[in-house]
Image (cartoon, rainbow, N blue to C red):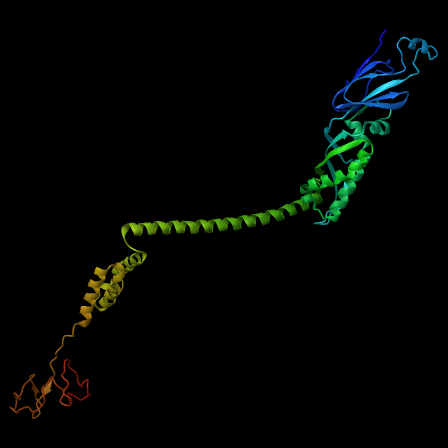
Length: 395
């Protein structure tokens, strides 16, 4: 005959409450409870002692040597009923939840009605074992994740759907921007649900909204979805083009700086300045000008060359300036043109400088033929009138 029983947890880690199949065990039976567990002893329908981790000796009214005699009036069944419930105190993570119906609201940005749902995960742990057993489990032999979520489904659906509808309406949240509000939704709904779970001895440790069920495939929804993202795509494209333009300008400016630095280094190594380089360019252009070779434009060409003499070099500039100055300062060579003279007596044409007429022999009393008889201006060219006083030389 068995004197005592050994009672320990034999369920899995995903179970919240598990009832041991051994009932009406004898007194002095051994109860073994693990660190992550608690055990509640029921005697005659009452929840009595709550045992923590360790080994415990149970005292019941079922005495091994006497229970056969005591149970004779009850047809061998003990009237001293006893049972043990094990409560798992570990955090139960990644418990899925989801709304059973859609939330209806008017999209604030584009003003069209739509329906959305929500889903996510939560983390639960038993906070008050006695409260959970008495108020929720009752006489059930097992309470696992699915059963617990079913018990709290009404709270979940009411709180989640009501909050989503109010939050999206009051904050004018667009359906196309709702994903970025998941953290805000999670914190707010968590605070609203926590007291509902605590009332039954369960601690809602964490609560996450991980997805919003949108009306994908709906013609109206897809139309506004395309319009919304097209708007942002156009803005992004314009910004990208602007940035590319700025980068290109910066690159061109940097390239110019690098080229300028390279040219400055080259001039420094070769021993000339930027002004001198510009002088070389001007000289080259002048040399290529066809008009420079003509005598009438020689003064312009040489003057240009002389003007850049300082840029080309002191020696070259001095030589050019000297040559030009020499040309400008030379006195003009007199151009003597014979003037027609006539005899005062017979009117015959005289030889230049003749003192007597070779026709009639008359002595000529007029002034030299190369001077004006009125003002004495010496003639260097032929002409009818004196360029100084206007005397008619042939009259």
